[in-house]
Length: 115
Image (spheres, rainbow, N blue to C red):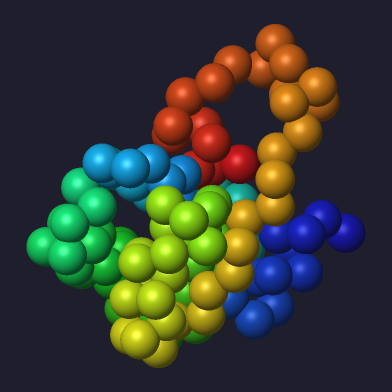
């Protein structure tokens, strides 16, 4: 059983976020089958974060059980994590990626958000 199949019992969608100082990249996944529904980048400003939350809500039917998995929830993603939690969504810190394990797989912000 994969981690995503376990998550799908409680959360219909997962939003993975690759965080940076000026922008965050968001990936929305269907937790039932792992399908990538969409990716998008938004600025880290309050307006950008609010636009991102609205964008996710449109693609997830505004499901309050959508799980947000945020990289750097205590650093670059701290404001986002607090804002998302204040909107009532469950939030968790993304596990650190193993660089050796992912060597040669390719790297982009969208791929990081999806992983």
